[in-house]
Length: 339
Image 1 (cartoon, rainbow, N blue to C red):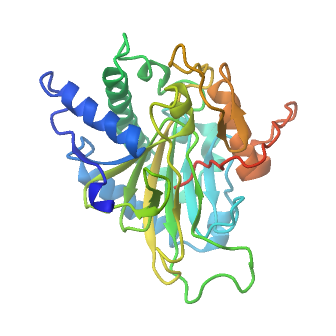
Image 2: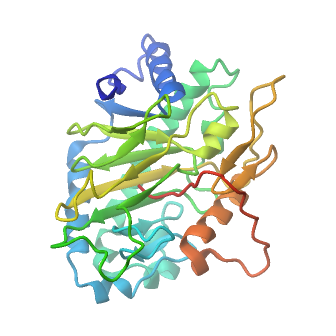
Image 3: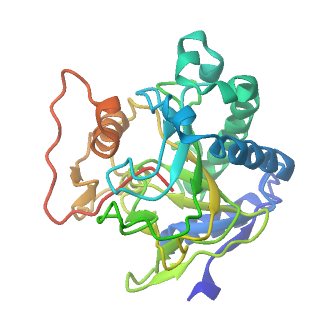
């Protein structure tokens, strides 16, 4: 099954003679798998290497120094291992916000000092990621034969709402499995679907597992140097009327033992908060669709979906003062925004 994992060369994506072919390939992969590897993408390898190098240096700092800058409602800050709902053994540094947010004076106290001199580079990298997400969203509109190729992309403006989020992640190597003091630690990253539109995952080692297209087995996602692993989130899947798939994925201690380290970076492309999700399939009744225990209904906005999910997973930083929490639904699949 893993030998059939889609690997798509997008080097000619901007060529008019190749756009339809590549759009069809990308979209078919997302119909079947919800995942694909992008080969010959436009983000320079040197820029990716620089981000990984900075990430490694930051995560090597003493934990008390990093812990002084917890995640904020602006999605800027640090989160250590075992701190999210799933008690996952990974640490993360979040860079949210619209362009310029990381350099803004009001966010300076939320950003660990290590990143002050590198914020401009992080902003530039986020911008490159956003550009690739837009190209993929145009592929979906083209392959789904929508009248406007900007149908999805037009709702993903970079400077609207709270922007999109880049997260640097480290799964640390430990001398023993961390269950002596935390008995409920069961994985490196609990099985979940993402909640947004398009996730770009940069890896430095294998370890991610994805649910097979038949829904019956876990498949090890290939790791190929200089390729980006792409997956879709629930918002886009629901918006497409289920034509595009949001696929469960996870990282286990079997796939990534406690004594092995893994670095990754995830860029989460999401539609602007006021985007109303109306499934584009006409004349057909969709089956009930759940994300993070919430039944998605036509007319829900991306902002409503995102706020409910984030406060459920990460707690007080995302808890508004005057908003009722949506009820969880029994038997619904979970969704998070961490990879």
